[in-house]
Image (cartoon, rainbow, N blue to C red; front, side, top):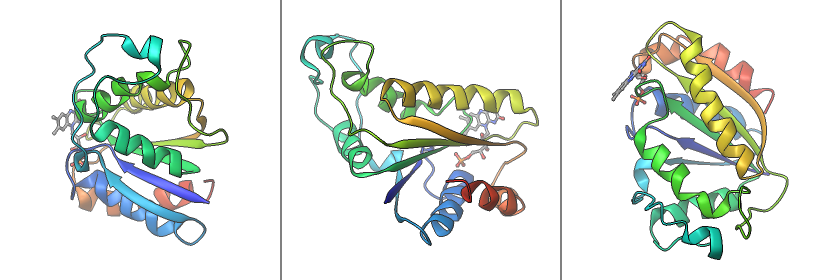
Length: 179
Ligand SMILES: Cc1cc2nc3c(=O)[nH]c(=O)nc-3n(C[C@H](O)[C@H](O)[C@H](O)COP(=O)(O)O)c2cc1C
C-alpha cells in the first residue's frame, strides 16, 4: 500500500513540513510513503472556462496533472495544511480548483481509481479549534467530490513553528496509528 503525504504549505521546511516528516516516519513502518510539497509543482489558476464539464480534461497542462498522477499512484492520501487566513494556502486551493475535471458534480468527469482513503491534518497559530474545522471541511469536501473516502482528521492549534510541532509529537503519532 502506498501513502502520499502532501505538504499543502508553500514552505518546504516549516511547521507543516515537520508534521509531514513525523507522519512519514510513522507510516513508513507499514506503508510505502512519498512526501510532496505543493511548492514542488507549478500550477496555474483554474480559468473557470468549464471546458472540463464537457471533456473531463483541463485545457491547461502543468503541475496539476503531475500531482494528480501522484494521487492516482497512492492508496492513502494525507493532506497536511497550515491555516492561511482561516483556510488552506492559496497554492493548494489553486490545485483543488484545477481538479474540477475529476469532480463528480458533472458528467463526463475523470475518475481516480476506487478505494482511496483520505485524511486531513491541519494546524494553525491561533488557539481556537473552530478555524481548524474549517480547513478540515475544505479537505473533506475536496476528497468527497473526488470519491476519496474521508477517513480521519487531526487539528492542532497554537503552532507557530517547528519547535511547537515537536511538543505535539505524541498527538501526531497517535493519529497515525489509525491510518
Ligand atoms: C500568509 C499567512 C496567513 C496565516 N493566517 C493564519 C490564520 O488565519 N490563522 C492562524 O491561526 N494562523 C495563521 N497563520 C499562521 C500559520 O498557520 C502557522 O504559522 C503555521 O504553523 C505555518 O506553517 P508553515 O510554516 O508550514 O506554512 C498564517 C501564516 C501565514 C504565512
